[in-house]
Length: 143
Image (tube, rainbow, N blue to C red):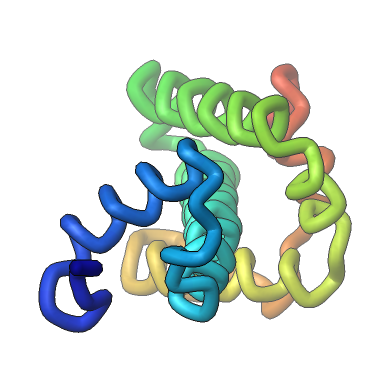
């Protein structure tokens, strides 16, 4: 007997994987399986957006709080870039989002939310002063 998607998701997922591996397609819950696969793609996009917002927030702090710069901030920027680069290498289809105007604006708005109330970050512009492509360059640090 098949486990219900609604009553035990973990067991349902194990069963779906088993039936896929054994090519027993008649037992697959295709509708829910398709929804879950789409959700996986969405979660990767959300992670990219979150990481890019984190990077943009760190860069905004770096630019606006120049008197308080420290090696930790530089390291956080490098680490965030490394994680984003790793994501984009594993999922190259996400790279086109980095240049998408709506995605870039959403990322910047999230970065503004992360920096609101911090010293010298009250007057950040409504649009990012640099592109995401520029932000991802390993040698870029705004003045």
